[in-house]
Length: 265
Image 1 (cartoon, helix red, strand yellow):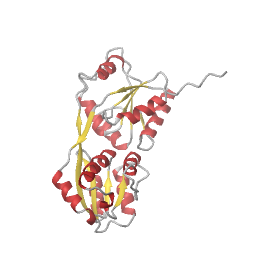
Image 2 (tube, rainbow, N blue to C red):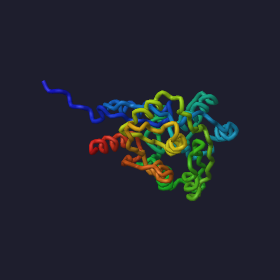
Image 3 (cartoon, helix red, strand yellow):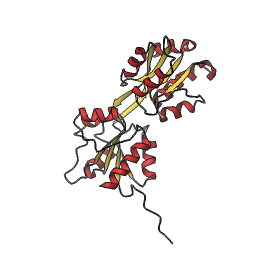
Image 4 (spheres, one colour):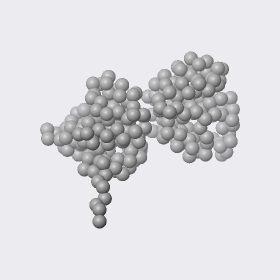
């Protein structure tokens, strides 16, 4: 009887820096590859809505040509408020929907809605480019649903294509304090084979909390992995090494890059 083949991350300790409420998907993917997962929730994502702006936007839904979602969090919090106000999804009218990436697209699909525009690469720049390529933006009204830390890149590029853009914030990303976290103590004592960054805000929080995450003398120093160009740019600006990067922004590609990197170590 042949022994089952060893999973590629068996015996590897991988630190995940996503918000606690978002870490489960990445943790499950890593565990499926045999990894021991250490959760370091460096950020917290919570609902934070400018209710006046959102109320105006919901009252004028029929006047928008596009709703653009820049994250899965934006979809969840936007539709929480939408369903509070309306009891029929048809209140959206004939508005067209755009998504920045797969995780965001899945949240939209969960609302039984069809996405009409999604880039192959999950970045604001790519989303702006594919929206512009539809030829539908000249004088179009566009609602961009976003968070407090999202860049203005998307809005500026849509406006450059002559769209009329309204931006509504529905969530807020904040740094967490890991000083008393048991997982942080474990990380300090033993380190990890790799630490994964899926956002610029997690990178900034990691640097800000260097003292709370300082490794013991004999702890294993992890390789640092980035989910994509925006996160990598932040890592470079803050002087952090980038040992590997996802080929395209996304959790599956990040795990794939991790497996390839550790296989060479």
